[in-house]
Length: 83
Image 1 (cartoon, helix red, strand yellow):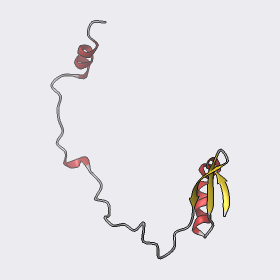
Image 2 (image 1 turned 45 degrees about the vertical axis):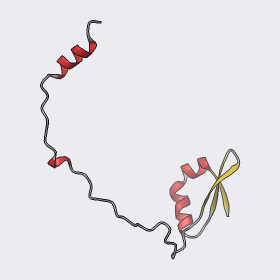
Image 3 (image 1 turned 90 degrees about the horizontal axis):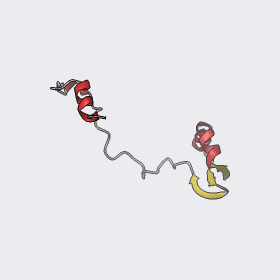
Image 4 (image 1 turned 135 degrees about the vertical axis):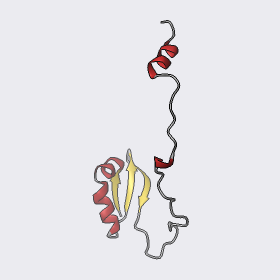
């Protein structure tokens, strides 16, 4: 198991994840103290399986457009008051 600092993990995240995918394990350190372990998932590991897939993305096309009664500069002048 390799040791890697949090900063090294941040800087080389893609390379580290590639190694984990190939079976390598890491212990992540912060200021020299171990804080996490990164290990590959077993093929039969179902702990992280998707139970409920994400819903369709929101598209604002069906939202009704609202028109303001006051103009923006009128609202700003009211908010600023007499300075």
